[in-house]
Amino acid sequence: MKKKGRGLATIMFGFGYGEGFPDHSIASIEIKADQRIVIKTAAADVGQGVITTVIQIAAEILRIKPDYFEVIQGDTHTTKNSGSTSATRQTYFTGNAVKKAAEDLLANLYHYGSMEFRSNHPEISIKDGEIYLYEEPEYSISYWDLAAKLKDKGITLEAEGSFFPVTYQPDEKGQADKVYVAYTFLSQVIEVEVDTDTGIIDLLNVYTAVDLGKAINPKNVEGQIEGGTVQGLGMAVMEEQVIRNGRTLNAGMSDYLVPTSVDIPKFKHYLIEDQDSEGPFGAKGVGEPTIIAAAPALANAVYDAIGIRFYDLPLNPSKVKKALEEQDNKN
Amino acid sequence: MKQENKQTISGRDFEKYFQVKNLKKALEIKAKYEDQILLIAGATDVLVENYEKLHEIKNWLDLSRVKELKFLEVKEDKLILGPLMTHYELKNSQRLKQKLPLLAKAAAAVGSPQIRAKGTIGGNICTSSPAGDTLSALLALDASFKLQSKIDSRLVKAEDFFLAPKRNGLKDNELLTQIEIPLYPEESLSFWAKIGRRKALVISTLNLALVLYFEQGLIKRAGVAVGSAAPTPIRLREVEELMLGKSLAELNYRELGEEVKKRVSPIDDIRGTKEYRENVVRDTMVNALKSIEKRREGGKNAD
Image (cartoon, rainbow over all chains, first blue to last red; front, side, top):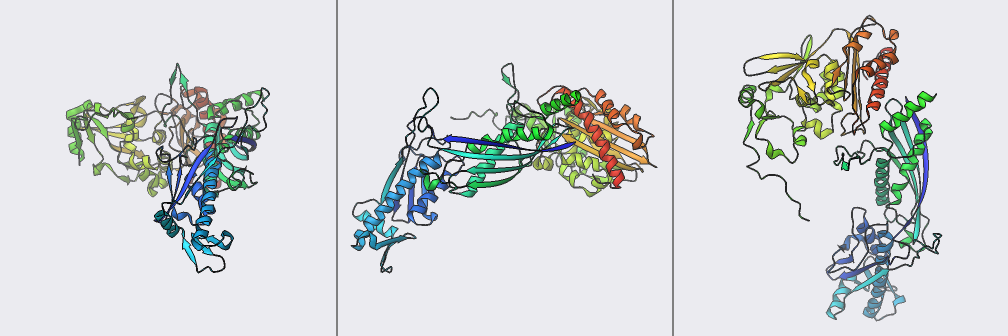
C-alpha cells in the first residue's frame, strides 16, 4: 500500500567564518581601453556561480552591460586574498568587495570625467558606458576612450575594494554581540509517498521558502536550492558509507548511491527578499542552508505517512520495512 | 598531484582480439580457445567487472558484429530471440510488448539508457548474476536457451541453466545462440517488479516475475520467478502448482506470498538485509496477484 505524508523543517544558518575569525575579501576592477573591464578576485567558482554574481554586481554599479566583463580568478600573482569558497560566504564577502571596488571606480569615472569636461561632477552623468554632460548629452566620452586618454598620462582607470566585517567569539555561554555576519532562514515542506510493501520512499514535492535578503541571480539561487536539497535528500534516503572491519564496502558510485535525475522530487521555490543591511544589494548567502532542512523535513513527512519516528539516517528501504513489520506485529 | 596510470600500456594489453562477422567463425574460435577467451557483446558487464585489470585478459572474442545473432521472430507457438538483441530493442519492440510484455518490462528496467543501448539479453543471461533483471522474466516465461558448439547444439531450460552466482551450464566450447520462449494460446496477464534502492542505474535488491494463463476463468499455467533472493535467479514451480486449476478468487494471496517467502534464500548485503528481502518478496507476490486481479476485472491487458 502507498501512504502519503507531508513534513516541515525550518533552519537558520549563520554564514561566513564568524566567531571573531579575520574573515575578509579583496577585489579590484580595471577599465581597459580595449573595451574590457577586468575584475580580479581570488574567489573560486566551484560551480556555484560567484563569477556571474560579481559581474552582475559590478555591472550594476558601473552602469554598463555585463558583456564587457572578464574575471581573473584565484591567481596569486595577480589577485589578493578572497578567502575560501566555503561557509556560504562568497556572495556576501567577495560580492561586497567587488561592490566597493566598483563604487570607488564609479567615483573615479566622475572624477576623471569632470576633468575631461572641465566641469563639476554634478553637471555630468554616466549611463551605458558613456560619460556625458547632463545639459548637453551630445558631449560624451566612452569609458574606453577615457581609459586610453588616462593611460597616455600614466594613469590606470582602476579601483580596489575590500570587505572586512567584525564578528566576535562567543563567551562560555555561547553569547556574543555578533557571532556571524548574518543569518539565512529557510523552511521546507516535503511530500512523500511510502510504499509499505517495499519500504521505498518516493519523493514527490518540495516547497522551499528562503529568506536570502536579495536574489542577485534568481536562476542561480534555484540551482543552489535544488542541488542542496537533492544532496540533503540523498543523505536522508540512500547515502551511507558502510564500514566492516575498517574497510569501506561501498567505495564506488555503483554501491554508494546518490539520487539520479529520476529519483528527485518536483520543486517549487519562494524567494523572500528581506534585504540585509550589510549584504551586497541586501543579499545573503544561500549555498549550505539549502542542504540542512531536507532530512528533518523528510523524516517528518515519513512520520506523517506511516506514524513511525526514525532517529538515524538514511531511511533506506530495509530500515523502513523493518520498522513497518514491527509496527504490524504490535497491532 | 599526478595520477598514476595503473593500466598496462596498449599492445601488451592482450594477445588476441577477434571481431568475427559470422557465427561459424565464432564457434571455431570458441572451440579452439575454450575457457581461455573472454566473450563480449555490449561489454557493459565485462568492462565493469575487469576495471583496471583489462590487461590481464589474454584473448577476446567480440560477438557484437555477428548480425545473424540479432533478431526477433514470432512463430506460431513461440517467440525466438537472438542473444545480441539489446535491452533497448526489446523494451521498444511492439511485437514483444504485445506478445510478452513481461520481458519488455524487465528489459526496460535494466541500468540506464546508455546501458540498455549497449547491453544485450545474451549478455544478461551469460553473466548469470542472481540479480540479472531479465532472468526472472525468462524463467517465469518458461524460456529455453540454445547452446551451440562447432559440432552440435542443445536446448536447455532456463531453470536448468543457472547453477550458482555468475555460473551457468555453458560448456567451454559453446555459445548461447538463441532464446526460445513458448507462446501459449490462453489469455495471459503478467506482473514484473524491480525493487531497488533508487529508480535508475541500480542493481536489483529483488525482482519478481509472475505470469498467469487463464482458460475459462481458471489458471491453466503459471510462471513465478524471483531474482536477487537466492544464489541464482529461481523459478518457483511448487508455488505455481498451488495456483493451477483455480480461479483468482480461490487463491489466498497472503498464503501464496508466504509460500514464496519460504522458498527464497537471500543473504544480507549492501543492497538490503535477508529479512528485508524475505518480507518484501512476500508482499510483492501479494501485490502482483492484486495487480493481475485488478486488470482482469478491468479487462485490460496492459499493466
